[in-house]
Length: 231
Image 1: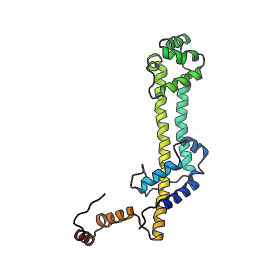
Image 2: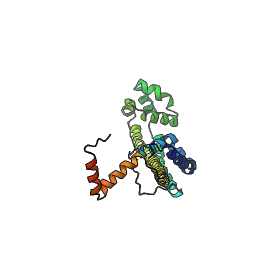
Image 3: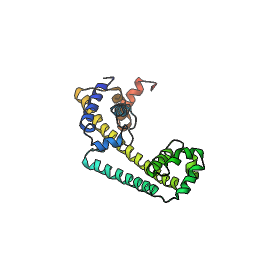
Image 4: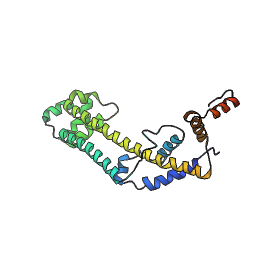
């Protein structure tokens, strides 16, 4: 009986990192940015061995990180980004009377400070507008005085959310791939060396009592233990 499998788990996790993460395509790594780190992946694996569910991980499913998978990710991401770029182009070419746009900026002192000097700089105006729209608390004057641009920004927000979901789905798939790599490897190690951890004891007892027809074992446990406290 072993009480801690940390060394074995870390060894297998390092192997997965070297063979799968270190060789990820650069654009996939850039897409994930700081979302995928060794420490975060380690916590996911520790949660798995601690009995916590790992997102949509299915033990019987194969999680393959190959060219076809990454190409499918690229296609999906590219479609979302293209939709965002199309809306941004609409915002840039949005036909608004310059004087009307200037007047809109002057209707609110915060809008004036933020946008008036950018009226003749459409790309900077758009970047500032989207930055303020995407802030935790967008200024109310955006919707009140720049209504049409605000509506287009709302369309972008839908695609921003889709992009974020795509990133998390990719990340969770990698988590599942790591789990499917490390989990069986640790199990094989324990079987090879004749080792069990406390989780194994619980799982095997559950299997013998709940999943198998084993009345003799149940009777023996009932005879030996009058009360069972589970921590």
